[in-house]
Image 1: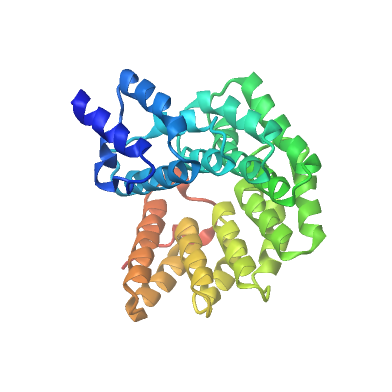
Image 2: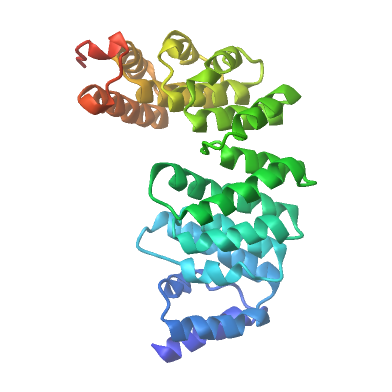
Length: 318
């Protein structure tokens, strides 16, 4: 096994050879000694090759849940290449280990590359959510939110500011609603998109008038973002317009409306989804509709999730 791993490292370090993609599963769940060996060999691998390696590892992890390359991505957070650092952060965004929060905060505050700071802000969104829904170290929570608030208002790069605000969408901090409103009022499509995403994450129904207005935006991605936000907020008054969006010419808008109808549930939503399922000839759309219907039925059958919306009390039959 050791000889085999040594051979793999020699190929990885030989920049004249093709990347041994078929052998990359051997990098999953490395022993500490193997990880030390890889770290020692890491500087000998060209930055572009390290970048490609991390991309390949992410694809492997996406396809095979049993593979884990977390330890490699963790040490790659300190890589000299900004691209490698960014990809490492992106690869770790689903990891909820609290020990990752400090390096993400440090990257947001100090990394010289805007793309790395933006990826760090996006990765911190999961920790902001955890702060809101579970027990979390209060001191760390404050550090995360303070760093994001500072970046939202002060980072020189627009993308970093927007990604930071998106991450704060989950936060109940008093400063956040006015920042969301400011982003929306800027008026350009990118800022509006970020504001709508943050509104949805806030689950605050005070944003309902804006969300309903944006259902009619000429830009498809803003209609889609508004539709998705309605589902996150479980905005029952949006049902008629969400049902109308099932006929939108843009597939992203339709998929957002399907998802949100599943989140809101109720007889009208389920009937509309069932009718669409009967007429679609798109296999991917049909599978997505099935999932939405299942979720709508789950909501209707779970008393703790049923709201005071009268539609929810009606019997659902498929």
